[in-house]
Length: 454
Image: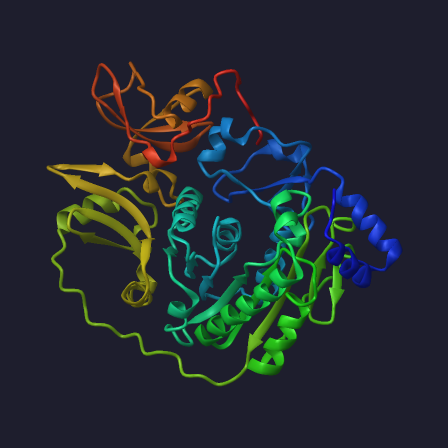
């Protein structure tokens, strides 16, 4: 591995000569593979894996399997996530145990957002934002598969987010960075690195942080993280937040994690010390007084079909916690306790989706949405359910034609290992595959057999 001379010089300054040798040796090794289980799914299979010490549902795999060939991967039963990034769990457990309106500002592809969705309280609302539209679509897919209904996926710039002044109680800024922590996984990160690029990243990061700070409520928490090592993009940005914007640095209890490096204003993950990639993470709090926006809005006067809504209430569990809304022939469920906040967000931001997408009405039929199939609120008792084997599951995920001779006509929920995959419409001689075309598996995996990871 050929590293830039300026990078080597900087790392030796951070670590010292002897520690740098261990660091460089670690970069030559294969990166660890880790997954995080979805709380909607439990499996004794994971007990054979080494756990990630700072994440309850995080596990290391002995090698990297072909995740594409595992139907449970597509069903959102787990997320393939770099272990260091899972440290956000410690911050939430120690400091954010109340209901909040949260924002993941730079959220794609969705690792930290899906983790936050599992960690935050059931009545919290999480806005997962990605400015780049193509990446926002990937974020939306991953969040739909994860199955939490208290999420809103948006695609806005940090300047547009700042218009929601003092609105969010918790903000995660996983900032675009020079990517030094990803060198052993991504050769392009090495090729693109330069001191000039580091300076450009710092300028961009501080602009994003300034906008995020404007959107943060009084007493709100902001987590700043990067996947890079240099102090300019890490500690110096936290010091800037403290001196320029009045942030207060909040330490994390670290007694159980001696392998993580504690600096004066943050925490560092080095590959020769922790089993994971390079990461920096810090927590600050906004103590300055600010006025939270008045978000009272007029009552929506759109006519709602009461009979339809009563029928759709049967599709979800805990229906009293949710409000079903109709937009033309599309139906969704949103948190009843957060109606005003959701409406306010939808008024100011570009929303890809919010809540649980339930169904579209065509004629007298409700055509169930894929999001409903993967939702944690799905009431499977309201549908015909068929458990399928690995071959049939893969055929479904590839959007191939299926034949279910023992199933009744109508909409059928397919499950694999008791985990919902999605819908087909059985018309007798065949089934219409309803899996989203943009999600379908295109890789040839015919030479694989039943893959069981969890």
